[in-house]
Image (tube, rainbow, N blue to C red; front, side, top):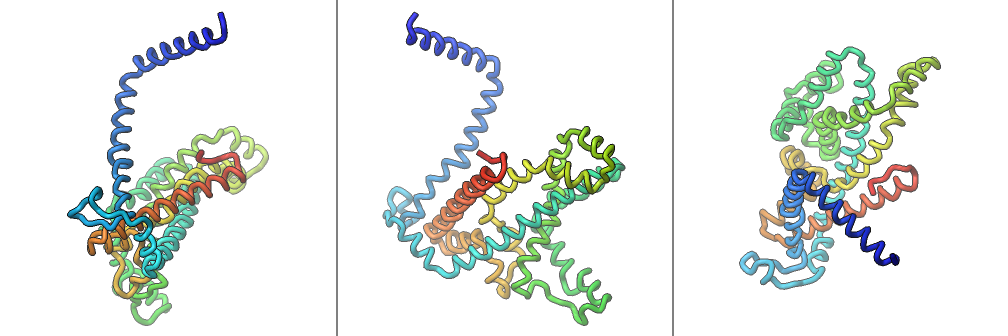
Length: 316
């Protein structure tokens, strides 16, 4: 039997094996097709709308009837100083949210793992991720009440004689980024810590026993066992979160922003809403969204390349 016949026989055998395996797992394949259809319809099919960013779009003419203008819309977008102001605000808030959310989630997971009372541990964990299920409307109202002139923060500062009169925290533009960061940390730390807690449970308990025999305390175990044990998880989540660095959010900035702090509160999402919906300039809004997606892809590739060079963990 020649080589071609052998390769043909192997292909037939592999095809029969694939058909047999597909028949045995037909229920899983049906579910996979449903998820694929969902992703295609709601994630990839809408990308056809990106053509609007390269057109002098007119709603009455539609995508097929509108005039193609190339990169003219992007040139108009990049010449707008307000757009670059929104990029600055989005980057600043996203980086603050990324840094503080990651640090606090890791610290919370590591410290909670050291709690020996299971009832107390479950109670703290449950209470910590409950704010995640609150809508930003409710969360912002809580922040307004907390930071208001009669809120608990002003009351404490006045009783401690730090200030003599209540402060309006939402009238200081430079402080808005920090307010958003604090709000995100309060709302999402418990929820973000769940995956780190799951990663900690996969660490070999024998390592902790060996450290205890050598006289290592809790801080030694956390530093040399727990943190290195979840390092891969931290890197993967960091790469994924860097892709959202231009997606700092919409609700909290829109709900807590005002005219006084608008130069520090407006993000790309609000810019798209302002031009794409409110002023019906769909081409500018689409171009801003394309810019954000392109930058996110580039940041993911760069972060993944850095992780690949500095460690054995990478996304792809």
